[in-house]
Image (cartoon, rainbow, N blue to C red; front, side, top):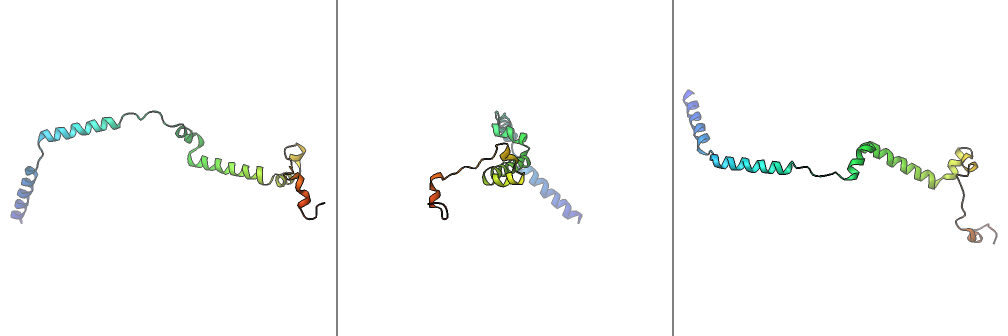
Length: 116
């Protein structure tokens, strides 16, 4: 068993010494790596404005809340102002904040049951 180990050690030692790169090649590779590292570590410049605003919004959580609030505000403001006013007991119309517009003022005669 000792003979096998010595033989393996001799083979491995020969393999280690046989394919060593020259010192000149190692120096050139290291110099090239240093030049690439120096070029990539240069500052990239100023970040875009939206990248600066993203942390101010709170990241994904804050932006999600902002989107939900915007969607709810749009729905409440456009889809059902009269329902919101009735839920608040008519306070919005008393303040003049809710108005009903007649979008088709001259076409009432076309509707069934309306005068015409």
